[in-house]
Length: 77
Image (cartoon, rainbow, N blue to C red):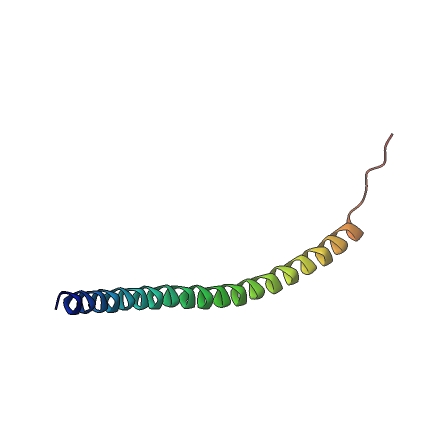
């Protein structure tokens, strides 16, 4: 009878621990999923920003060339 109560307590405690562990694993999995989604969105936005910055740099180089050609240089005396 003592052994029967001991096994019931142990099984109940084990089930509660496993239940808590599965809840914890689900929470961690949810956080990982949110992190991955955030990373994908962030990389897409960074890629778009990078393309825009490269276009701006290209335009700046063209402007420098155009201004450099029209600019008169001062002669040293």
